[in-house]
Length: 385
Image (cartoon, rainbow, N blue to C red; front, side):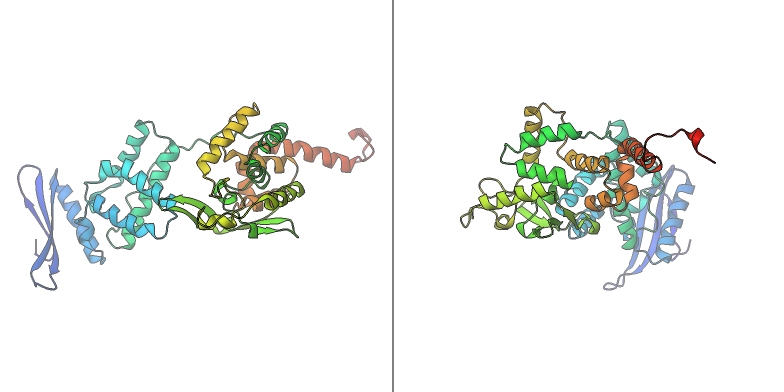
């Protein structure tokens, strides 16, 4: 084949050298080639050559054919760090390091095929990893590959079309009305009682209510604003943007919660300078020493309260689900509950909390019946049709 088209050179049995001409070096004027050894029948070499020529003709950088996945992921993670939250970046790094790099890290970026990606997911399933972990790994790898396309290192996304394990919805575990009452009675006897009370009644996320500041409370309107999250990072603590734009929201507080917070504010004493993280001065909820409350330690205390109250073991995050379930069971309109949770739509909220629907339907049936027959039950036979 001509030099500017490419070459396939036999190098032994079922072994081929593919050469693609890349033009002349800008500084040395020497010819530049991309060389790759391909094993198998000659059609494998022909397919690879065609792919590389298409990359070149589309203006893609054939550097993608020269860089290994490990090296590319280093660049990807460095670029992604500035746009990701600290916790998300750690998840990206951990998933790629544990599940992708050991299998595909030494492969050339441009040589990774959809079957290679599928093989990675199959290996993870065989190791007994959950469908959620496999899907999250896929999401991160897909993000990396799509960025490679934007950087003109690839022309196609090898993660596209991958078959993923079905995600089994975890059975939601929440406290019922009586259990919630017992939980609050027990929790309010502890230093962290106000935290648990706000968590249950607002259905906010732990990272959201642990980041609340006194300035977020509108005492006249009786509301509190979710405006930020609190994260534990390597350097210490920091405030971050909420999970999504719609996560910024205003929540109406119950009257007894307002009174509880007024009492907490009255008992809060100014901390000496240097005794805590500077940002903790404005926080509503802190440790006795004035430091931010760590979510993991709060979860441990939560388990302790559940044990003390002889209640079922649920996760700290399930207080959010409990609060939403109680609101729906109390006939609060789904749209209102959706806004309180920061969900995208009421339809999504009802899908997540579908276990409450039978009770809601029963209540709705009774209320409609009361409208139709305000003076008691009337036989259908006595109604003129």
